[in-house]
Image 1 (cartoon, chains in turn green, red):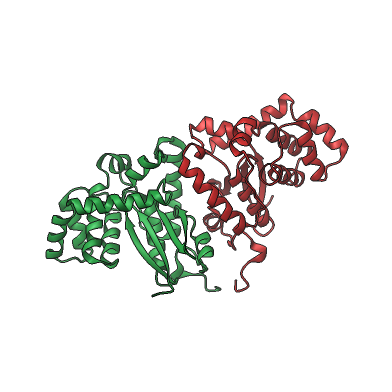
Image 2: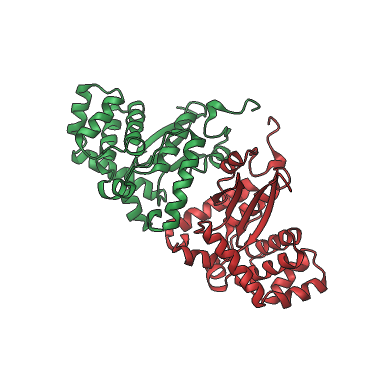
Length: 227
Length: 227
């Protein structure tokens, strides 16, 4: 029905590199001939299911990531700030509720627009405002900021803890594992009936090459005048 | 004495991502206003010293790296082939002799030209020809291909196992650890009296931005005509 290449983005709002990847692919989704599908999934289960360890287990990786994220934040123009207690935010509080909520937003909408807006508000809460993303009140606040109506939010708050949404999130997470995920973001590009899988927010140039599109850097709207 | 920015490349021929990083920075070394310094170092000691685990410990990472390296090989135009037994090559045979030999080449030359050529021949042996890099005869063959004379090679074969070369390699490896290394390649850019450290072969676009240079992709000589 369409010649657009399907690109799936598996992500979790607990992952700062997911946010970078999310913003970049959102900037390109109308510039490239792609049909972008958001796949909110649960990073904790991907790490466990793949046997991967968090980079925070290696002290030198933590120090490097800190610098790397600061530089990428500026270069990608994403307003990222480190939470005061990132380990607590990611591992103790976790993102399971938030990802179920996003699953419900997507289920209810049957599309991507609100899922994009609510995802961004959740990324902002955790990675800019250092606010909770686990309580119903927090999810509700994010949804308000994303422009959802009171009645929509009421429905979502009933829906997101349902067995159906729990199963849908599990299923998306399993899909990510089946594509070979050991972390997020994971971009799966369907090219010539083949799934080309890219891990991380640092493979866009290569990905563009593989799907026959042009990479203009992480801020394509500010692309170099000479291009 | 010079306005060129010093860029140090820490690498080990056992690391395929080091080869990609090595070739790309070699392509840019005369295009960018940089003074490139090769820093052959020993990856095994960096992994141990940083407490990092090889990505080969996670099966899904191995499968991903295999695809990732194949795609990057094509996009970067580096003739990489997987050895029949990569684990045996990297972990059982190892690169300690090869990195000591490169240290000696650099010590003897007092420059970069021969170190570049011999490094490339060693990368080719391990990652293209699936040949040994541990025996003196193997190192000698690489040096012959790199254009070194018989007398130079004879000297190098005496020099590379000396305590002085062992210490020099240890010292380079310690420098990498001091810069925060937990793997290779590691690019250290000295900008405004500050060391900006980039891990991996996937930060060149960001690195170019940080040092005020232009990124034209991994094959700048074939840069898009529109640029």
